[in-house]
Length: 260
Image (cartoon, rainbow, N blue to C red):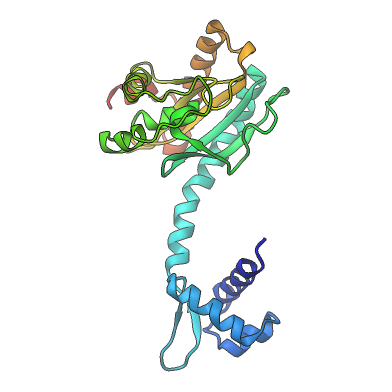
């Protein structure tokens, strides 16, 4: 880890766990840091609004931004826990790798992954990213974004393989098909030998919040297999949707999707 970043995080953690505001000298001494360097790090934390300095006492304390950050993370952690058992079962049923993905900016981020017995080396990892438009979970998320967002994506379609969709009209048709059938397909669009299938996960307000997908070697993803996996993924997404929203997991996912 970057040494400066590590020291900054140490300071932030100390202040977060402290029962009262702290002086610069006490922070530096407790962490065995140079006072001048500690001051610079504190100023950076103040500028980014994670820390505030009292004008009268000069002491430092954390702000509510940490609470906001934690609140943003909690739903993702809950979703991962709710999906864990379903992902494990899906891997056992298909013997393929299972991904749980969310959208961040123009990318898909892999929130969780369960590897099958024959995973593609170095294809994905937890916390890894890929463009929305060229992986199955990404396209399952992208299909339900607003027109303005999709237009921005269509302006930056860069080929990753010969199979990547880089024609804006073709991508638009692809996204419409995903909405109609309720799942997406990736045919070697990020890595030529890797195919994938994915379905969206929906919150109680009807928003697409994540996608669950299967990926594996193209030789194993025949048309028949893809159709089978699509059914399994729709069922898995339906169960996760139900668990996440705290209602009957038999909720009709296809009806929710078609309401878009």
